[in-house]
Image (tube, rainbow, N blue to C red):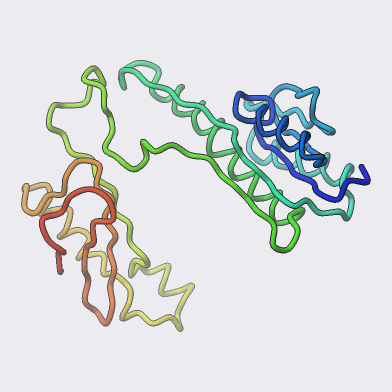
Length: 227
């Protein structure tokens, strides 16, 4: 290893943003490791992955190569800037493009987090990169092939009162668990256009003392809904 004290791993270190990160940290005299599909010649150390490999295989490869290089040493930061995006008609290559987005965005973040659990110093930094489009309704294209005026929302419960949760968490405070019937009632109301949230809404379902409320953490909801 280099005698330099500061070390960073850039996941996606050969992409547009990743290359800028590598350059900047090198200019600041940090040791820089890059993980990407292709080598960044400016990095001190490169790990080349193949996105078509399974997630467990990618993780194993990256961790093995880092272990051989770092041994018992830690890094100051892990910066994940790997990723990509796609657009178009949902009827064309939807599953194929989704798999690509999964590999480029989700798998890279998962492995970056796995690296963090093993090689990040105390007080270190992990940065993951997403997209602001996650905070608004999609799609934004007229040619998406989704029905006009269709609404897509996400339900965000804390803990659902399921048989398996009762088995695995028998000592938990079940007064804060959301009954399944209340989720069903909520969805039924929306299907009938009763208190239906705006397209793209993220809806937090919170139960406390056997009383459930739905809070819209993003999007529009006329009022806080109590069930």
